[in-house]
Amino acid sequence: MIGAALVACSFQAYAQTPIDVKILGVTFIEAPPGRDKNLVPFAATGDMEKVEVNAIATTRSGLFTQWTNSFFDKGDVRVTAVFPDKTTQSLGQADIASFPKFSTDARSRSFALTLNRLPDKAVTGLIFEGTVPLSVAKRTTKAAQAFDPERPGPIKLGGVDIKQFKVDGKSVQFQGNDTLLRIKTLSFKLSSGQVVQAERGAWARMNNEHQQTWNIDTAFTRGELQAELYEDMETVRQPVRFVIGRPW
Image (cartoon, rainbow, N blue to C red; front, side, top):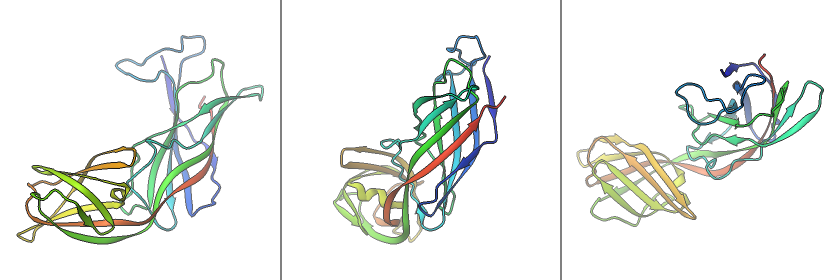
């Protein structure tokens, strides 16, 4: 009922920053000609139509941060449809996915641009053009701080201000300002000397208040927090231009 294809595409990225962008592929879902656009694949939910461009960004210097602002800053990538008679139609702004994947060395990260409505008439191609917000840091630094779960703050972990925290068994929730975004990795040193790596959990932001949850595989006791922190964070607005040809 609905066709999907992964196609090779041409693109151009304007390297005004030390970041290279490479397209990985495209998913193209549209209803067959003459059929109702509001078709849904069997056992599927969500959008009836979709074009999703998947790409990877690689920084030549610095690191991509685990914090991404695509929940709040969707960039300004606009989409234009191209028809067989060479005419065009603006389709508005593409959405940017909020859950990218990062390489182990933090030098590369994925991003995806999606469009959820196609024109009613057939198109020969789509042009995605604009800027994508990418959060980067120049380097990282180490920090450590004594930790007592019975004293809920405030504490200072290097340059990170934790106003208060809440321990719930094997989880700890930090509350503070935007300096919490500087935490790249976190571990907990037990009183025995054993170091346990923490896993990043949920996070939230309301106005200038930030929350982060970290989980370990043992209960939090007195010990020491050890962190790797991003230094000199900034948001780069990376120009992109993806030209997508229709897959059939």
